[in-house]
Amino acid sequence: MNDVKELELSIPGVSDTRLVLAKFFRAIADPNRLLLLEFLVSCEHTGNECVAHVRLAQSRVSSHLQCLVNCGFVRVRREGHFAYYRVVDERVIDLVEIGREIASDHSGTILECTRVTSS
Image (cartoon, rainbow, N blue to C red; front, side, top):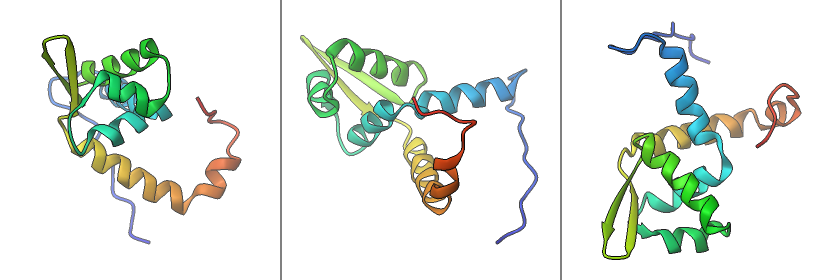
């Protein structure tokens, strides 16, 4: 295993970087938001398509999409009565893929961890 490198936690112009990072990870920590990110990375989809894909109530999907939009991970484009959503920062997907690899390597201990609860 490689040597662990020192973490640099500062973000220019941000007084509490840890708060921003924690909010960032909470935004992608929800299983339904992860499913939406995965769905929206390849192409633009309508809100109705997102509802059908996630199989939740429209209001819940709308709330999850709004979170992703507000955090800057997803863009919404309105055309007539329709809203179209798409991932705008593919680095988020890269991070999810890295997380998937790490989770795969440590799945046994992660599942046994009692200090972190599932949502």
